Image (cartoon, rainbow, N blue to C red):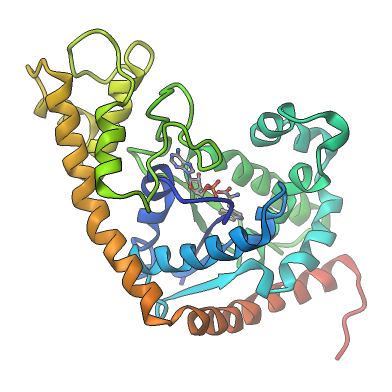
Length: 330
Ligand code: AMP
Ligand code: TRP
């Protein structure tokens, strides 16, 4: 059976971008693929974070995974930090990626450009190495992610070529990033030329927001001065983003969504329909999330997940150690 793997880092409250670009996609794979979905808590340490906040975000994400339809019986749900093989393979893989390629990563450039050079942590620089290890430990064939993470998966592919060629055998499986056709990059509601991101709360819809707040945020989303509801990300980024959100949640193409609003000349009416669609999806989702939290199953899911994940990850780690010449013994 082919494998699917993905993760989300618990650095803040999840957004509608996380939901449409990643979270909502995961359950689609669990019947067809052996699926591993984890919480990238080691990645969350790459920028300073309050320990209590990190812990509660971690628990939230497990509940969100289950609320989004991941079945812990079918999918292995686990914490990255529970499987020590992630840290171990990281130490090995560091030696197969180059400073040049890591410094060209968009996420690194974005994050580090906002800091003083002296204060840029090593972790934010080597972030893609840890991520490559996540993918390779499970020999994942497909990696469902939003647009912004595709570059890291591409780098993982380069690493696979390099590593397999160096040792002249298929040690690692070649992974492929897959993103939703509609909604791989949801934009901020207040600055629609920027990505909606959980570290930038302006213009975000948080999955935990109250319905009246969500409605308010959508109704006051930035748009242009025209009145046509058309997909044109360059000239009408705000309207295009709302159309994308609507299309994604309705499982329609952009063209189909555009057709529905043909002739409508009131942005207000359009926004109300978009808000209704978002709430139709998020209200029951949040209810399921609350039920999962109340049910008290989280620790059990994680314990079971860590066991299953460790078994697979340790097997790969052992193979990698042998390949590079480390003395593996019983
Ligand atoms: P992160 O918040 O960086 O841990 O992202 C978790 C997942 O959500 C990754 O697959 C991202 O690519 C995806 N994601 C994050 N923000 C967005 C967005 N604005 N639109 C679509 N997908 C996103
Ligand atoms: N870097 C991803 C993000 O910020 C999270 C992540 C860590 C991940 N390791 C991964 C996603 C492996 C897919 C596969 O969203």
